[in-house]
Length: 294
Ligand code: G1P
Image: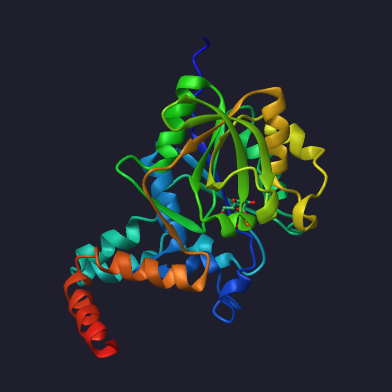
């Protein structure tokens, strides 16, 4: 078999309006909402870097300028922190700069498939990663790295799936798995965007991490709008799967859904319980609160 090309590039679509977090997202991007002390999008960028990704394109839109600023240097702030000897803070500010980051605005968002298509020139003729920002993933090996490793062995597009409660399938793209080719890696007969609960082919939901071959772009160029009258990446993947195999890999780590209010609060609590500056106080607070709520 030909050795698969290295996966070097990632796309992070971030043009969504964030209506689930209004009014917080009226003037601030939802991707900048913090989990303890870092915006959610920074965790996604960190996952990309830990997975060997060298270049990242963030697809932005109106009102998203703060994302670009976050990944830029702030010399006045850095000088100030350096002069005051606040080295830890300085390091945390510098952590987000010096990456190979690109930004592209999507002026008339028409769905995830359309967002990915705007990255065609950036990607060129190589395999690439798509990472959605509504979920943070934790595992010993980052999920994106697991998909990249799988791609480098098989040369086939691969996306991550996770079993979700049956009544929630209509919030996701869902796969119809056929045979398991190795532990947790499935051949798929169909990819369906947001099926009705009674029609779903399975409870295995697509969770927003994909390695795709560049052939997806010519499919997206001709893709008709689907569910919600938007151009769906899932529909294009279904077509790709008819031309070249697309695998689904079951994720065994922890998924934190930060795309809704309750998930966002839970993630803040769980990350706060791991953060060196907050964990002890937060633990005591939760214990005390639990007593008061009894
Ligand atoms: C998108 C995808 C869907 C996927 C989901 C994961 O949907 O279209 O296939 O399951 O992300 O979060 P959205 O959440 O943008 O409606």
